[in-house]
Length: 316
Image (cartoon, rainbow, N blue to C red; front, side, top):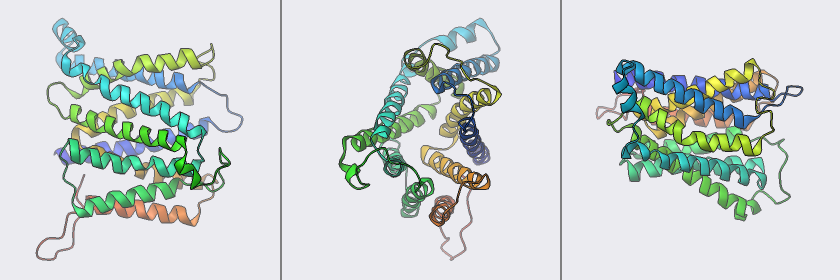
């Protein structure tokens, strides 16, 4: 039963990631009204916070006791401030690093997050990775990097591809990758703790993240914070909030490594969808997509039985 729930949640994550990526790309099309992305993030946190709180109260019966119990900040709940802070630091470092790196270097180095997540899962969560699964993770890292490369992208710097690996921006991006991976694994540890429900954890993650999101809105955006908002943008806000709830469920019923595979599949879906709308699909994109699909099969397939039976793909 748990595997069925995990499979359904992972499928929902693939759909959510694909949908929000394609919609966001459409919202930034030529001729479209510009809108404040920081406001989108802040609104999605407010929506996620509200939904999580109301669902938790509904499950407890909308009583005053349930309200007070949910709103009480305990030591274990305050611990969620750590991954929230790590995520904020990671996001800011990535934005700084992007200014000094070409898109190709940024994409390649960013995929180290998959390997870092696997490493932290083994060290902190005692996750067991067989040689087969470790090879699948390595292939996934390479496949996702290849799929996301865009040869027509304009470099942000005059340095060569290899020279940039020794620049400060690459170091900042590497730190951002480590912080993001560590935050994800710590969050998984908290979500698997049975002391509070998943909805309480979602509520407090949003509570800790919201001040940073609002700070970005009022310090870096125009006075008209809802400038350019239309139906598409509101759908993006909804999908962003939904994504946060789905990720919480993934960490509860599956794990971070499986989440990386789901996100990789959504990248593959978006690449194929983009080609259908006129973006050129090159041969190395097809190769990268094949590697991603094969790595997903390797990670989810059961090992061969002693009798030499053909492995069956297990639900993850």
